[in-house]
Image (cartoon, rainbow, N blue to C red):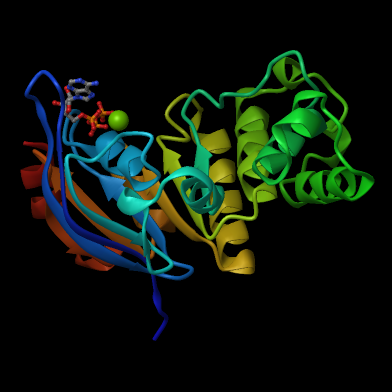
Length: 247
Ligand SMILES: Nc1ncnc2c1ncn2[C@@H]1O[C@H](COP(=O)(O)OP(=O)(O)OP(=O)(O)O)[C@@H](O)[C@H]1O
Ligand SMILES: [Mg+2]
């Protein structure tokens, strides 16, 4: 069931200083899955995530998104492919002095000419869409507040809303809850899961907290020293495997 939205073949990343970020990663991800990547610090989780939209240039390997190899894409083609990939960051990466709704509208920039986008000229339908998305993450009341007036958990929900505004087929989140308290973390993870399910968006989340991974993910991938050492549903991740992973 379900076609692969993402297919990774022999992905390898060696940084210019010779550090091997990823040895060899091959995997395939189905539409609508919520995957959590876990593993110790320095394992390659961020390198993996950032390679998928080539924020981080792979050394070798292939990455197919909806059947197209992003590693071969250039110019307009690359831009169009990146538009399909939403990103959520640990530090939210919001424009602090802009309103919540303006931040969400930035998710639409990939669809506009740079001239229009540069002048902040968003269409009425874009604004309406942004407000609707904010309502979906429970922030309709905060739409016209400055982003830096929101709590950390709320800011991360703006981060999710901005990514959703891009209408992505794939959502990548690198430790989205690392700066949040447990209650806010749970809320952010719940919204990620809910929106992924409702919109059929495949979501890949790097997490440090194994308990959150088990609670929310359909599938867990354990990475250690640049290689996949576990890949399965949460109920197959034993305490022993977790111990080996973090050892
Ligand atoms: N720009 C870089 N230049 C050189 N080495 C790097 C660079 N970025 C990451 N690395 C190295 O690549 C390896 C994988 O790093 P990565 O950031 O992907 O790990 P991670 O699993 O995300 O760790 P963490 O849990 O701490 O975020 C590490 O050895 C790291 O030091
Ligand atoms: Mg990381």
